[in-house]
Image (cartoon, rainbow, N blue to C red; front, side, top):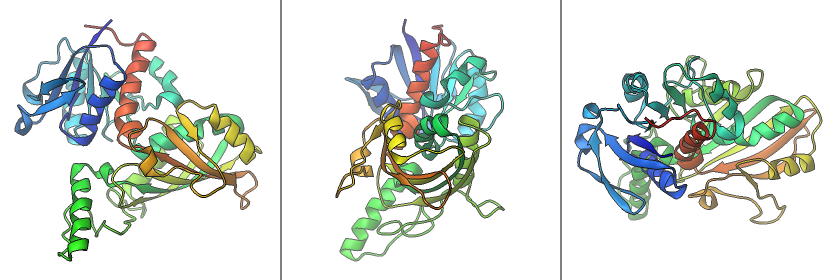
Length: 340
């Protein structure tokens, strides 16, 4: 059976990556339609060996479309998500708008695909924050083994998480440094080239940023509401790939060797953990790959049952596009998606 698929926000980084992933994984699509705002109408976008022309979201009729992969921001998701869902087209949304809605499942297929079986009243399924997605893929098998109590995480997030404008700003500033031109800031609050910025998304009254809050509440919704998470989210001058230093406190004993063996068998995880120069994964190696890589697994001696590890993944793929397509595949495998 084949399905008609619409990709909303097709001209953005994640939208284009969604098209790449659909083609690479040979998703059973009878037709793929690319949609964006009116200013992008007519833009040509590659999909496998085809060239698709962008149509306007506002004028597209979703009747007869089975699945909508949406990566167009929270405002578009708020306006269009329920409308599209009401037409019988299932929406998988990459924005933050619907993640904490009680009637919208928040899904990472390796972790909680079974939550789809309870249904989706609004016709919407949410994709988690990119940093949360890779972290819970690594945490899930360890939680099953020894029950996680608390997670302390520091992220090192690439500029692609801020969209094409973020990538362009890093490129321009890097060039400006080398040719001694003035550094111009538009997207980020401080210079990002040769710098790190401990600020992603807006500040909340608590002193945390919204990105840090997302990692906490999304982990609880996806994995376990009893897990306490504290995050410090940092933007770094890397184009693609988020990295995380994760410290985990467990209810029960677990050794680094046990964790290494468990993660080697875990879906979506690749362990690269040699105690030698270069025996770990960095964002450069993870870019363009589907796996969540785990390295530097070691005992944390500061708590009774603790481990520390290093986690890296391509934020445009597992953190967004790949996860969305995997959700769509879960819908098919669980017989929750029917062709119109």
